[in-house]
Length: 223
Image (tube, rainbow, N blue to C red):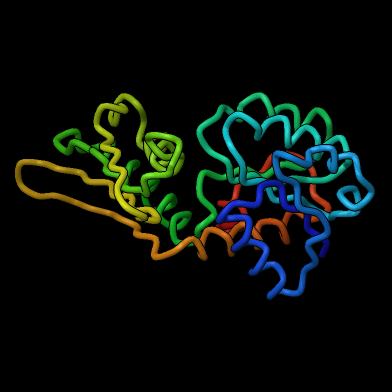
C-alpha cells in the first residue's frame, strides 16, 4: 500500500518505520514548508494519508487530501472535527478520526462505556478522571480524556472533575475513578511508548484503503 504522511514529527517518524516494516511504501511526506506537494503527482499516488499535525492545520490538510481523492486517517486532537464528519459523507470522501489509535486505549473506551451504563443506576458513585502527559502536549484535557468523558456524560463528569497533569516525557496515562463512601472502582491505561499509537494508525490506514465516509478506530478494533 502507498501511504502519504502529513506531519513528520516524532509520531510521523515512528509511523514511517512501522509502515515500512509492514511492507508499505511512503510515497510522500508533507510538512509545513512543502504544502505545495499536496498538488503533486506523488501525493496523488497514495492510497491513504496519515495526518498527525496541529489543531490549527488539520482541517485544511484533510481538505487538501480529499481534493486529491485520498482518504485520511487523522490523529490530531484539540480541534472540532464535527463539520468534517458531515463533509466526508457529502463529498463521498474518506475520513477516520480517533482521539487515540492505541489498541489498548480503544479497549479502555469500550470498558468505560459499559461501566458508565452500569453506573447510571448507582448515583452514589461519583466519577473523576486524571490524565498525565509529557510537557509538550498542546491540548488540555487530552483528546482521549474527552472521549472518555463523552461516554460518561458531561452532567456526571464535567471538565472540572478531570485533572490534567503535564510532566517530563510521560507518553500517556488515563485513569477513570468511580468513588463512593464504601468503595472505589478504577480503570486505567498507561502507554509505555508511542509505538502503540503509531501501529494503530498504520492498521487504521490499511483498513481505510478504498473506503469513503466517516469512521472511527473503534470500528476497526471492535468491529
